[in-house]
Length: 117
Image (cartoon, rainbow, N blue to C red):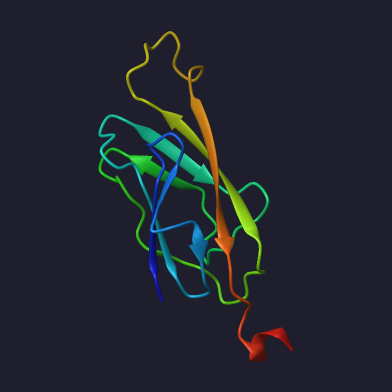
């Protein structure tokens, strides 16, 4: 089983080692070195993870705990959205200058035989 790290602070969103996951792999969303940032990661069309989210990053929480790819997740790309706030906007603009990003997690293996019956 592999560990995948997704850095939502980069443009575009970066994946290490790749956006491809298999059932049982773990995924960690991180803000990288964006210490003054906040981000909310959500899956608008369903998730492949056992914990549905949304996941909020920022302040003391620079990364999620490892999130597991569900053994029953269908083989497909699961798109996610990131609402990103650089944390340095003025109070007058607060809530209006969010940078939106998106990405996807590609589940590349089929569920085990016993789960498909």
